[in-house]
Every structure is written in structure tokens, then in C-alpha cells.
Amino acid sequence: MVKKRQPGEEGSLPIPEVGFRAPHTAPAGVEVLTLARLRRNACAASISLTHRPDFHHLLVLDGGALPLTVDFASYRLLPGEWLWVRPGQVHRWEGLSGAEGVLVLFEAGFLDAATSAAARLDDPFGPTVRRPAVGEGVALRRALDHLDHEFRSLRDEAPLPLETHLAVLRHLLAALALRLAHTGGQEDAAGGGPEAFLRFRAAVERDFARTRRVDDYARDLGYAPRTLSRATRAAAGVGAKEFIDRRVVLEAKRLLTHSDHSAAAVAARLGFRDAANFGKFFQQRVHASPLAFRATARGETAPDATAAR
Image 1: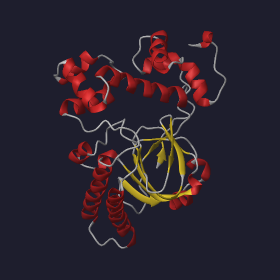
Image 2: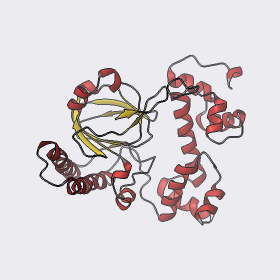
Image 3: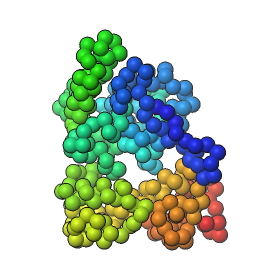
Image 4: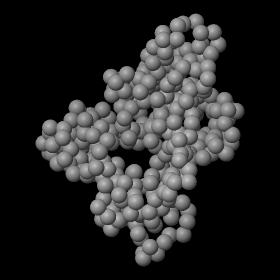
């Protein structure tokens, strides 16, 4: 893992943006390690930092408890539960020293497109914590054990050619991701949804800072606006416009909490014509001004109303 923050730039992120780098003896794209090994390999200060990685984290807890936050939601992972942190999500381990488990890190591009779609890897609202039933837990652990064994085999003795080994790792990781994607979550998942919703969801993730109009997405995707709204409501439980707005609000919260951008700069990054328009949008949905939300999220004194910009 490497940090990609550009320090010293005006408005730069104080939170490290972390990219994936496999260990020297491991294949590119995936890593399997215990939490004990993670603690040995990284300093305590770096583990406790808030991070925004550009790769997936899958973690099953074997012992202890792990308090953490992911995109402004607090969780407490318990033994037998699985955590899935996706690329771009802001998260922080709150008490890693008291937890034991196995962690799988992998880049989104490591799996093929069909598996990525079936496992909903690009779903920004997929469940963060999953609590498998007994049978599900056994199957998930078996899949993880096979993946772990194959990952360690290259480091230990390399019984297969590298390309064959990578192919086996992809298949084993695919089996784990597909099983986990269809395991019950702590919060409601958006589900796979019909093709219209899947295409709409991908378009929103790509273009939410360019447009918040359902009509624009409908035109670009070749659907009627009502078709997108019906598909989104069926798959995600909210209409298309609400789905777009929720994604914009999430990104606004990330930028306000984890950067020093002014409200005007955040507004510009999210496609608003000015800070006042953004402030009204944010206030209506979060019930706080952008800077008041920032102060609360950082544990600071909230600014008065005249400082809203």
C-alpha cells in the first residue's frame, strides 16, 4: 500500500489516499494477511489514521471486537462477521489492537468484468457489515482458506507457473466475493437490480458531479425517466433523483470532513454554480449548513451563520 496524497497544496486532503501495492514476494492485485501480520508490518500511528483506499478490503473477525467508522457510520465488528470496505470509502480502524482476523485486499480490476458485475463490486451503497448464517459462514470460511493457502503457496514454494497461480487466485477470490455479495448485510443492500438500474448506478458514480438531472441520465442511457425511477425504486428503495442526491451528499460529506476546501470549492467540485446553491441543497438534506456539518464531524465549534461561506 502506498500513500498518494500531495501535501502542501491548497485545499489538499489531510486524509491519506492509499493505493494498492502488493508485497515484494506476492503477485500483483491481491494480498491476504492476518490482522496480527498487519500490526507487525505497519506502525501503530499509520494504522489508526483515517484512510481513503482505492482498493477493496474484505475482513472476517475471528476474535475480539473491532470498532471502526466507514463513511460517517460507526460499526463494531464481532467474531464471525465480515466487513467490506470498497474503493473510495473513507474508513478508520478505532481499535485494531484488540481484534484478530483475516484481511483480503484486492484491486477492483483484479477480477473479470462478469464477476465484478455479479458481485456488485462497483456498488457504493453495498452493505458494509455482513452477518452470515451458520451455513453461509462455513462456506465463506472455506473459500477464504483456499484463497489464503493459494496466496501463501507462491511465497513458500511456488508449485505453479506465475500466470497459472494468478488465474487460480482470481478464481478463488471470485468465489469468495460472489458468496459474500449474496450474504445478508447489516443494512439493506441495493441488490443487483434490473439492467436499467445497474447502468444508471454506474452512470451516477461516474457523472454525479456533472449533472443531478434524471433526464440527463435517461437521455444518455436511452431510457425514459420514469423507467429509471421505477427500476431504481425497485432495486434501491428510492427514486432516481433521490439516488443521485444521496451520492452527491455522501461526496460532499467526505470533502467537508476530510479536506480543507471552502464551501465554494466543494460546491465547484460537485458541479454547483455557486456556494449558496450548494448550501441550500446541503441544508435541505442534512439539516445543517456545510460548515456546521464540518465542525460537528471534526469535533470543532460550529461557525455562526455569517460564516456559512
